[in-house]
Amino acid sequence: MDDKKKEHLEASYEQVVSLYDAADALIASVKAAPEDSQEAQYRMVAPLVEQLESSADILTEEYIHLAENDSGVPCARSRKVVESTLRKTVTAIDAFFKSAAENHRAELNGIFGAVLPLVQSAKQQLFKAIGAFSQLIDLSLGRILSKTDVERLKAEEPKVAAMLDRVAKENSQGRN
Picture 1 (cartoon, one colour):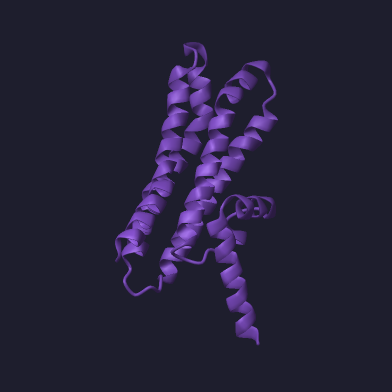
Picture 2 (picture 1 turned 135 degrees about the vertical axis):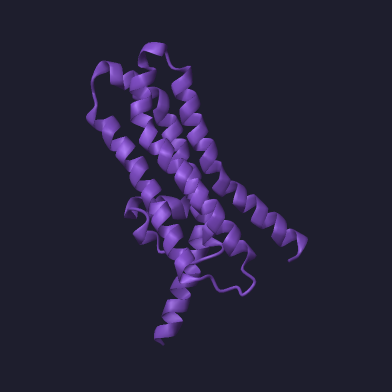
């Protein structure tokens, strides 16, 4: 593997590892909150933090496995694991946003207001991780994201748009 490709893979790997940073930022937010709201804030972010950490564990392992795969052909198991893990993370983020929308009580609004930007940032990091994986395997984004999120991802992550274009061309050539 040449140095340029190795550097590119390492930079992409950092996008996957950044999911740990997103979880850490949420925990730091809880610790920085006023003491009387820490417990309530922790209850709201704990499921998302746990999912981000679990996903980061699985995805970093899979990224290393795929990056070291010399055959150039990723196994179906890896694709399934990556897609499933990404979907679980998207579901956890969406559940947090749904909970935020449903809880309009004044004391909860302040708590959500403090962590909403961090959760939005976590979603951005997830998009970057999807972009990193799109360089190694063809992902079925419809299994991972809503249509709105797919369109947003394509606009924000050129690597994903390139993967989708390549897959569409391969599919059209296969039908001809």
